[in-house]
Length: 419
Image 1 (cartoon, rainbow, N blue to C red):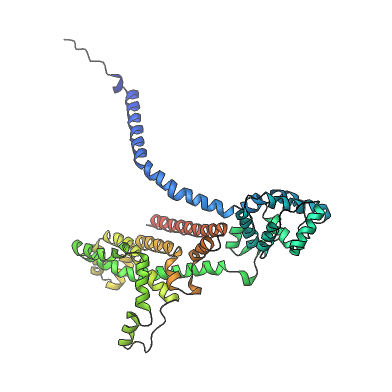
Image 2 (tube, one colour):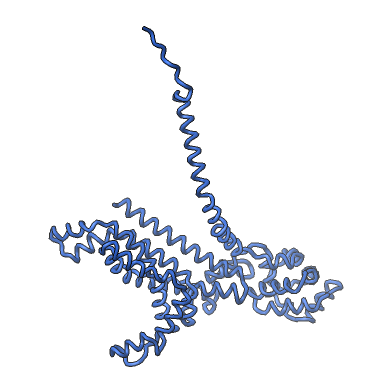
């Protein structure tokens, strides 16, 4: 008896099966992309675009190039060592024409602020010239009229400021955030010792953040260890208490610390009642109050990574080390603590990065020498309205954050390779 084998369908052939699997894989990837697309758009609009705008504004210098285009062109061949002479009278006429072409006083004010940030005194110089418009006549007559309005137009430093800032893009803001500057010839140099501020501010920011991170680790490690040894029900209840600060406004917590740390506050009264001090301690408007409040606010960010790592460490390891003859304390530091290094690193990185961006707590609880870099970013944004300098300082914080994260990744990777 002869049986005829049915013909295999085309899909059952090796080529057809591979095409079917490829189509299924493409559909799976497309579904995954559609699921994460809203998150990607959210990150693009709220994270990537603002950071790109910040970095762009940190090197953008549109005020002079926009307000004085003719003057910038006229000064291109100037040696920047003396006032533009007779051969460069065109710069003076161009300056008058540029000022007259400004749409309104706000544009003149923006120009004056930008030049004044480079050369003090330029604000009144520009505004006086703007008020004296129109300035008409030959270049020599315009020069005489400008000098009549304000004789400081004969000083080279103001012309140097215009020539130096004539480009739409500038490194001046970033250089200033590192206590550097460009001189009249465009060479990079350090500012005078009496004007070097941001290096000390950046060091202070890192110093306060390091101290807060250390205190959070010293307080959070034993608490996280204790929570990891409790039954799940009790640990969940106590973890809720740890998370309570997340549900309270930072301003409310800072205000509470002001009440607690003042001279007649609960902390000083308690210390004096216990006989530990004979007079109230200075705990407000100094570095002590800033560290105490920041440690309290950021402590949960240390506890949570530590707790999650400690819960995954089997308790049998510690008992095995003790049963093999190791002292309990030595077993804890040699066996248990190394296994919690990922939690220590993650918690320390999280607390440190959050600390370097703090503004409200140092502003309310600290003194003049306790303000961190974010305070000066807010000053440049809200008070002096110098967006370029504010964005440059923000870029410094961003770079510091990225460097810290890269170091953390390198350390974690090396530990995993050694393990």
